[in-house]
Image (cartoon, rainbow, N blue to C red; front, side, top):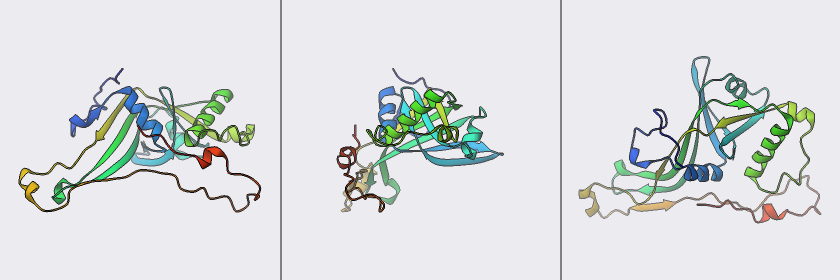
Length: 218
């Protein structure tokens, strides 16, 4: 089922690139790592990058209880969260028509704090597993003190849209005769060889989830 289009979520610029399909939105969110959180603080616009995770129809973000962003977002203000995946550089025959292939999501809404201890712990597990599946069960679990020092916010995925560009460049008709290379330079986020902590004992083996780690792509 598609997300309903609202005044805020309906694309105004290049509306043909707008996508409201729920599963595509979820796939973009599940592939990304960093979101940008936009809000107004003391009358001034602020945008902060942070990690996140999706659980069903909720977007989770977390941080220190001292975080200004999280303290402000708990006060029932409007928030705008964006996630962008860059898939390629689109090189046209003219400078004007250069572009990028991308998949992006914009979420509007109001965040609420997750206060109950078990729910907060489950949210932190989701955040950890989103970053690297299998890690949570191996590491030390948060203490009560650490839980109290952490704020976790949930943003409902209700007012949401995606914007997607794919394919080759779109040049002006006259420019197709130019003998200038045109096409797409694909880009992809890929893991490199893990680098051990200098203080790691030499006999601690690299876990399989780190050795074989790779993000699936739709």
